[in-house]
Length: 252
Ligand code: UDP
Image (cartoon, rainbow, N blue to C red):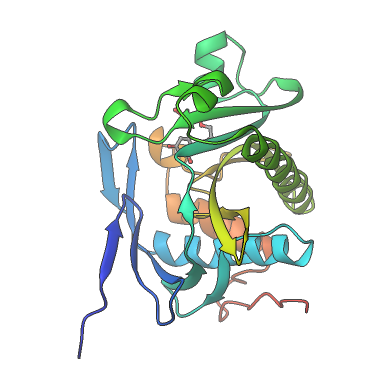
């Protein structure tokens, strides 16, 4: 059987050429990394959970009209997505202080921020994805002013959607990261949400107990990562306990 062409191998996913032009297959691996890959492990089942959860969130975004790359899930570890030119930025939205902003600005973890705060990091592993300002983004041509307006609008819409969905199942959305890519439709170009949305890229805390249900469980050695991600999936009805994973319905 002919092997599919590998396009890119990242820390948590491998990308293959898709079956039709303009499509890509995203394969979710079980590899977990943190602190710019200084800490690494293989966590059985993580890839399956992230594949299902990213499908769930992207489908929800499609249903409320937030453009994203998701086309369909192919199997337990793979999904078909639209190819796009990734803008080399990690777009972070924060509702509560945690992680790097707490360290950088001395804000106690868990403090509610006066409003959602958006930060940008330049995607470059060798540099450790440094924080950059809009001034850097414009000066170095990573995105135009129009792109930045669209990115802010996408980021805030994703934030409202995800915050609401998570709050509905007793989970606080502390912060998250998205990536955005450019697609061309004839003469027009637009930006869409790409990469993945999963507990690998969000901070999720139980509303009642404050228990962490995200990658900090791995970063900070707080217990079983699959238990944490399974709990998120179970609450969302993505993977009911002991049942075959439920398929989210796409509204047309
Ligand atoms: N994040 C991510 N990938 C990165 C950096 C951050 O998905 O390369 C997510 C991270 O999981 C958290 C949010 O972005 O939900 C904010 O991360 P922060 O800057 O606090 O980073 P950290 O504490 O991991 O250094």
